Image (cartoon, rainbow, N blue to C red; front, side, top):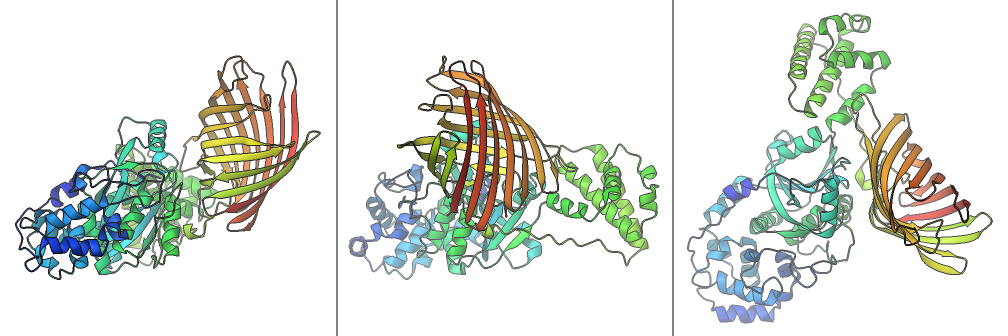
Length: 638
């Protein structure tokens, strides 16, 4: 979920400085002592809004209990402010309403709220000399706040769950959208970290996070063009006063660090906190959540009536796929030749398919070729041959358009699968089954997040498998035990197509009762890659993954090995099925071979049945393992 950004915080450094001009004292007729008494009578230090302005954990996550999430001392006026909301309140009142109230310019949202609560009606006069704050407020000119959801990006560990950010709109004109600003929260990454290091540090809270304000045009380029991620935009129902207060609070958060946790204290959670500050009656982060992912965030906004529309912005790849659907096989091949700078363009234009086509068809072929060249250009460093081919194609397109003014480019309409209609991310699975010639078993499994290969794929990337923490309890032969656990399991099946030649890949950290040593848990880490091909609704894949496995029953506790997987996935949105073969060989163990057939039957958006047949074989010196089992499961998503 990229939930991170590598751009500098230049916007804030340039514009979000702090004015320290002297102000007129708004407490001319109010003594500091009286204000402190009034604050105590109203119990302001324990009010939800004060705790939200300080970003105190009010029960939403297991981290940062009984203190502020903010991890920078300059976010507090009192040295005890991070842990003591009452002491911070007193110090804020003393600072804001004394004879030297300069800190009101640094914390304008706190100053405004306290002024209102303490019945000081002239608080706006107290901010009149905060030149830089007022300058930025006028330059931002926020009129609308929009939640933006870029889809998952499987080639980046930080973005596999998608991402969430806000866009600040200055007008209702859709043409000026890219000129607006974006509010983004992300981890402050070490540029030398690879995906595995990011996953480890992100899950362990070893990164710091920070709010950033960046041009929205840069996010459009990053998500829609470079990473080819579809984007959904959701205008929010905040009124002008709420938006202004949110911007004032965002000013207070410049240069402020937070702990960053990949599964909960992430971009989604931090944006929900901002909304709670803007609209005090909301309760979006007070219930404990073990995971907070962008998909859930959008649904939470819908449940709280914060969304008033949906706009879909397809990526270049989605647009190209839609264009290719309008072409037959010969036309697709010709379009590729037109886009290939190694092919002679003049000779290609003499192709019978092109020369016999109508101006409308020729324009469609050229448009597709031109977009394909532009797509390839976005995937790599500037290529002179691609740039020249792009210019040549554009020249021919313009010539046809001039000679045939009635011919217009085909307007594509892409039907998006609304993420608001996807299955929920948490899942309970209740299973019953039988192992042939052994006995019956029942299982209860809980998965925190969020989608596997045969879950209902409506609104998800086909061939994506992204599961977070998971645990399975099994009852078998009058005994109950933890049968398996999982920290993370990711499979990205990226079929090789005309547009993409990416490899598929997987990463898994799991543990399960081993078949050869039923009373002992085998824990393993594996990661590897392979390839996938797609034909209509069928995806075939093969992967090879190095594996490290630990089991106290092995002659050596830790062994290296290899896992070969081959599978056939049939997915048309609902009722997906999967046939998979696995061959696992450790250095001092005989090979384990497994064949698994699974079939999902959707009952509703958040309910399903799953059938599973499993056969495994392993030849051992002491006892051979031969097991055939059948299992039926009820799945509840919530």
